[in-house]
Amino acid sequence: MRANALALRIKGLSSMAAMLALVTSCSFETSSDRSKVASPPPPPPPSSAPAPRDSVAREQRSAPAMGGGLSRPYPMPPYYPRPPVIPPSTDRFPDKEPAGVLSVAEHPVSTFSVDVDTASYAFVRRNLTSGRLPAREAVRVEEMINYFPYNYPAPKNRGEPFRVTTTVMPSPWSRDNRLMHIAIRGYDIERSERPRANIVLLVDTSGSMAPADRLPLLQQGFRLFTQQLRDDDQVAIVTYAGQAHTALEPTSGRDRHKIIDVIDNLRASGSTAGGDGLRRAYRLAERHFDREAVNRVILATDGDFNVGITDPKELERFIADKRKTGIYLSILGVGTGNLNDALMQCLAQAGNGNAAHIDSLLEARKVLSEEMASTLFTIADDVKVRVEFNPAQVAEYRLIGYETRMLRREDFKDDKVDAGDIGAGHTVAAIYEITPVDARERRIDPLRYQREKESNVPSSTRRDELAFVKLRYKLPGESTSRLIERPVREADAFANFERAPEDQRFSVAVAAFAQRLRGESAPDRMTYGEIATMANEARGRDPEGYRAEFVRLVRMAETLGATARLR
Image (cartoon, rainbow, N blue to C red; front, side):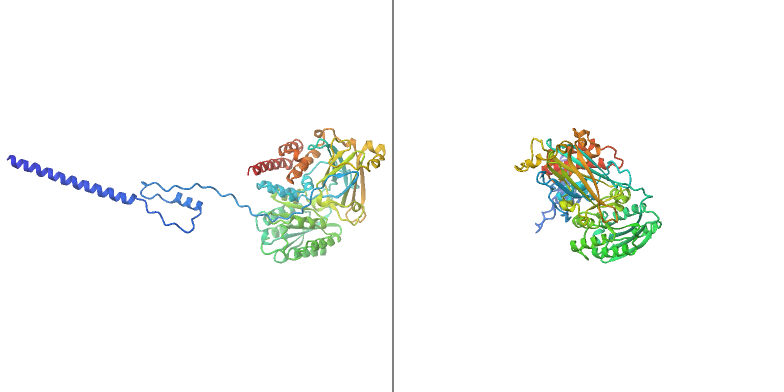
């Protein structure tokens, strides 16, 4: 029995060993299977051209992990966002070197044409708000200054359409120099007093006008324009793309909805037949010419003239000839990257009109609604300014801006020489930087043989006058100019810059900013921060916020300049 019991015990142990071996065998098989699943796949063969890094990174982030989450994923390379690509600009601007310092002994007289254009300021603003500093040639100092409305003293009646105000103050960027500020304000016209308007809108509808900041923006602006029309005004619309087309025959201002319907249905496509469009627009204006009305063509374009009259001189002659018939031209520029500002400036000057750049709906409202009277209704043609400096008081001078508006000395009295025009309520300023004869430093060495000539100046003139200002103009429709004169006396001077009128101080801040953007050396001693402070202290009454916006633009330029130095 003992033998039987021992045999049974051995048999049981054998069965348990067999079961344990079976279980162990199953465990190894399962582990082996899992190891087969978890093993990473072999690396792919190298490709001839690696995929872009950001594309690979996106695939690795989105692909599921292999091996049931038991294996480590391949390490992802760091992701660096690519900087935005800014296409090269093909904008074209008239490029003139700034006026240099002149000796009064050699050049006692300075002559220039007024300029009421504002296109430069809007273009500069567009660049700064887009995160880049404007090109030097895009900054025209006088257009920057004259962009803003100023509360200069107004003329008392329409008998004399202007009032000239002169102010002398210390230069904020040069302790040895002074600034002589000449302000001109035109007579304003009430809406009920203004003459009828015979307007032809000449609208570029070529393919380049398709972006939202071009034709669609103009359409919004023209809708605002129609709200300023009187019932006795007339508006026609000519479009030009592959060919010129009369979209709207002359229509009364009382039919605003009809005018707006045509405006809203304009579409951009095709090439640019600018010359053909000009001819058609002028023919339409001539056919409906009204001697008792203001007759004007308003050209709205990005400035891309590539079909039709393409020669700038031929275009200028064509528009100048039409000007003599009493039909003037104003130009609205839109867009950037393709803006032919140089051609627009040339044509606006030839057409006795002004040029504006519309970069936003707010600017469209300013130009086509708030300042419509100034844009359309001219109160004086061929306005010229001549300044004669007294050598007993002033040794040197420099006109800030107006590089494209300089005239010869003999042009001042020549009524055949074309010059700028001033619209109702327009304000114009010109600033001279002058060096007194007793200044510690001069930028030009004095001449030996002019001293005797200077000593012959009458003593009364030495005491009282710094300069003598003359202004010539023609009333609309007249061919003979009229003259306004006034001396600039020490009584017009302020000993401290801070005590000068707010409008004059603000315009000086704008002049300093524009010169810095152009890279001129004169205001280099002033930082952007100091310019912003000067402008902020002279903001005064600013109902539309234009001056507050200017201060922000100066701060933007300061930031962009600092960023550029870090590169």
